[in-house]
Image (cartoon, rainbow, N blue to C red; front, side, top):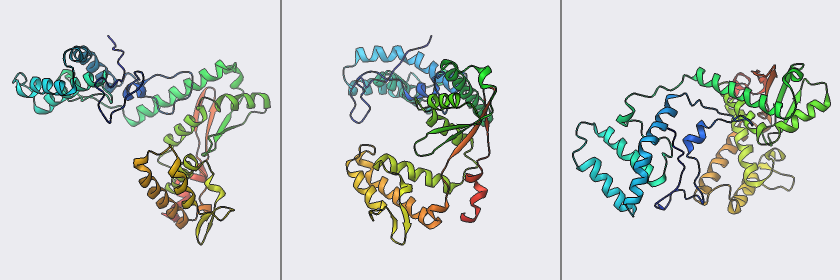
Length: 331
């Protein structure tokens, strides 16, 4: 039995998410199978964690429904579950961590109708531990799923596997706007079609994240620092940090405006950063700019990432301009 649980703040707890309509909990979204568009990180439902979280929801879902019918307020619920698990003496045969896990799982299923992050796996009803997949297993599964997603996208667009097999393609993605360009295809019509479908539905952005994760151990920290600064500045100001030049007074644009002043002003009105974290966002950005200036902003290349595609399979390539060894002198 699979419980179709979804997030809903039944007791309207302050400070907790309150959707207008029930939404999928984060752990189910993580394990959701996507086949018609690129998803950068894919996780198998054969993993122990998914099976454990599913079992916990099956166990505690009916209890949550029953509790919400029985207890009118959050306070009544807390009192009842505290009595049940900690004070009644009915769970003397379990360790404190096991009792606490059962209490936490039933409480969360009652409050929200789901286990928002997967649940407490110390629950004795699981009866065995959870074995995470190895890094190589996870990487292999993820790559296979991205290959399937790309194949489905191309097929849906009328690009058959036999047609695409004629080409050894390379996809290159800009790190600021995530615009993808394809090379290795001598038919402009086909090349344009491939670029059009991969530059929709966030496919190029998700493929960028997939490449970045696949090469995470080899990308220079300086290149990543520049990428994150570019992304943050773009999201808050709408501007391209590369339009600013490094001077003795910091980074300034053609109008003579300092990048930190522009960022601070834009933070006042943006909704991208919650008000509570705007101070931290400015300090973090200013610290990153200082580091980039020290290393020489214009000397650090952009995080343009590439990957090859042949016969329905992606192949990692060495992105020479961004690898760690390229910047050992800065470390």
